[in-house]
Length: 423
Image (tube, rainbow, N blue to C red; front, top):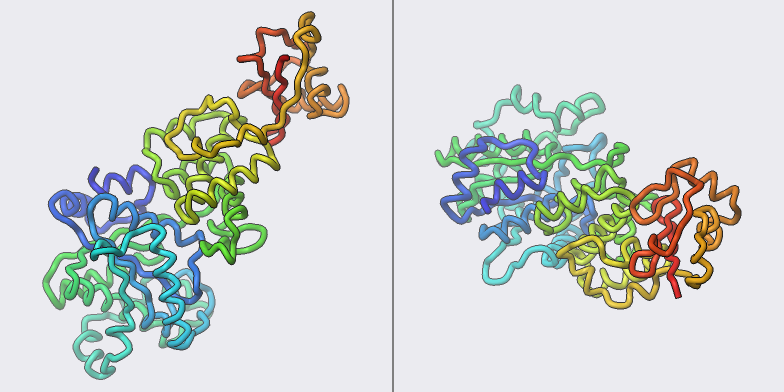
């Protein structure tokens, strides 16, 4: 598929400079495009996953991604999306962080044989002659126009340093250099980078006369308004030493129902039609979708083995949401052997069920409820399910025919469940 259509179908597109031109560009030739990453730490966090996955899709569609590490701009500090001045790091810290980021990005894109490039803008920014730069590059910038950029306006109320004000100029210069040296025709970034991106497009056209393009991604927040990549413990890091794979898995497993479809589009490589099918499931089977989301996101970042271990540990603790594999998926979660062994179940004789068993007694027998009164309250509050079907009537009598392949799944809420099996 055309890369633009892939990104649009998966929800990556927020703004573009020229939709038709970008789509045609991807159709006609191999495109080199870049995204900048701030080397202020030795690991990226989950909030960086959208741009990272965009680069991965770019490579999978046959184009060449550039991951630009801001070794030079990191010495200045990007004011975009920040209410306060960033802490400035020294060159040694930035160089060390840049090497760590390349190792991390290699989990998502291949840098072998020039299929992708990792470039540090310190290579051209650190050695700039200030007077020459002002004369040759600075003359193309209007201060009035720069003041209208969202990243600048947000900071003017609390104060914007002169060094931060220069950031837009330096990022624009990056785009020009990458176009001149590597034929880079596209810059991508978060929606707060729009002003910087269009400024780089304008500079490149003014100096070289070439057409280049820009594309931004939406700011990702949960349905509750929380910034993506945050948990109760703080930032969710891509580094396994900072955020262990099990915690990483649980972060995605605990996705709100209303966010599942978006997150599948952003953070997995599952096909769009499968995403639609998985996201359309109703509770409690929607929990299987969340398991698949968590598994695939963990697999991409930490590898198959760590994803499997995290999944099985979660199943052992909370139970499995689809032990009988009613949900079809192409996910390699299906290869996680032994998961069913951790599924909580309890046996009952056919003789006991021959005359029927009330659904109230079934919930008490399973241990999901400690008393008949608790079981009645659960049903009345809409939290009791047999498989994906909510129990509306507390007088229901269960018979042997209700057991599918000899098993009956009971759910108390969205996470607690037991299977009663006939013997």
